[in-house]
Image (tube, rainbow, N blue to C red):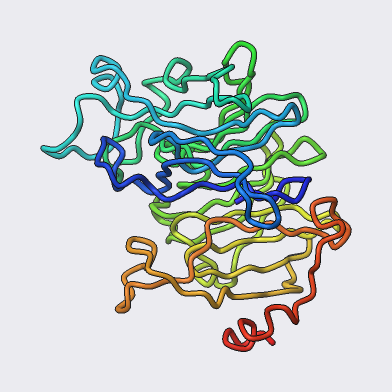
Length: 324
């Protein structure tokens, strides 16, 4: 969910109940909904091909990640992944579409038209229902796209006007990453999940800040020992105005704030448990406190101006959760 500058909440709904080629894939949604502070419906977009991420643009349009079935020829030429008897003739490819307030498509970018069959190879431990599994879409100050493809462990900058990659990085460096964000210094901050990390490394997560100009990693954060900080899926990181980094260790529902010197100065664990299937990580109860992503808002943020933020309104809920 995204809290908009006007205080409205923009979020994805649950996956549609009707079966389709994307049924069961993580991040699937059936629609986008915008509610005002009082819960009134402001805007919605229903589409069963939506997934993972979206952004409200300054012009009022909405950018969204979507799937589309690729041709059988393109599917045949995609390399990597393990095969099964149920593999589709038409793999799913990622599309970035921009919708105006009327729900009309005003711009689109089809990833497979700009990917390389020789370079963009699916991890051998992942299936072949989709080529890239986009899990994040962000917009640079110039209006270009910053994308993340989990299946191929790739982060890239895309020129919105011509659709070409101006920078692409990741395979062999990160593994099944999430939530790249563009920093004020021109660097990119990434949550490197680290699942299926290449030997001799064990699976562990880390945060990396990379300079696209030379592919140098200028800062990173990892646990000590490394396995003490690990989320095999979802998750994110966000650079704060004070230079610290807010980290969402998604699978465990853990949030931490770390300094540039790697000191943890704040920590919180989500107390809310929910039925979550594959996110439960094999828990006996089938429930988990997993969180896809986290954002921090200052008390003087425009979205919160004039809002009643008195925690005593939720005293009973906070008491039940043990955070009173």
